[in-house]
Length: 411
Image (cartoon, rainbow, N blue to C red; front, side):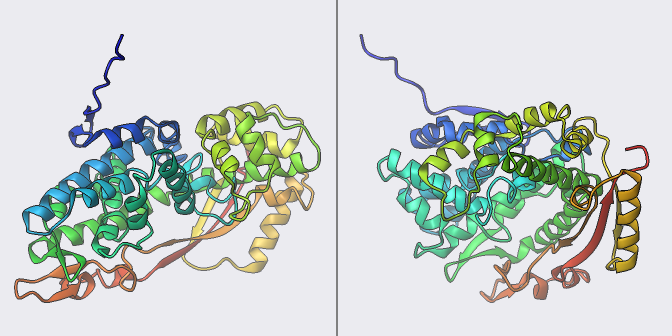
């Protein structure tokens, strides 16, 4: 009896773009792989749902959306006479599909808590290399493009630049799910205005205002969503929870967790010892492991772990003070001492209940990976120079703010 053949040319229904077509069977097989399916259980926006209840979407949805936009970009560039071979086309689909596969549980919130000294991009590359072995070298060109080692540099810019398919999807998607309309960019028009000049991705002059709106939208989304004060508090508490759990495990205390999470609590993992065994364990770790552990830790005998875990589970978050200027050193010392006395905390414990740090927002970097505008006379200018938008030059300057988090009186 012959095995039933699977139809791999699927159509998915996406709330942002409508129907999305999976371009070929290799992309289908990569989506079906357990490594990629894990992204269904990794939130796109960490703990932002504590601020915006609708922000429950995942890295899986984002990656599929990026493939859809990449298909549009390839069609537009080919229509304009840019030669893209079938192999190159397939490679950029694979690269954009897997660009975020290395994100850990709760995405950016725990990027440096579960492992240290290795970024999610580097872990993505390790996943891609492991999949390349499994798929007998079919991802080789995608890896070359992802690492920016391929001769045609604009293909990498479609995946990683200041106007790539990643940003075009996440701004529109995050805007939709949070309900923050300021981030709702016109990705369709931006892609339609793309072209290639001198092996660099450029935007035709007609698209200049769409690019301006894109940069302004990015700035607003960072202040209103990604760097929202309540989200900042939640993410910092989450980092402290994991830090305390690791500390307790190191001192021989019992801290219940899933086998995957337990491994990372017990084992210091860096770039140097990130073996294939570690990669396989990492592939089994997702938001569910972390959240179920934190629920369990609300009843832990350790006061610090228990209080911090309850703060997250019950959404009894810390107070936050944000300033454009650095806080006076004496003010910080006095406030820290007051909290320590109020909650009878040791010198070690206070470090978990008082957080002082800074945040930075740079909507556009005019030095790195510039967005280039192509004029009819074939000249090219950086958007910051080409734009008559008075604030665009200002948006190229990083804005730094300082914050302190500490328990409310009712904590």
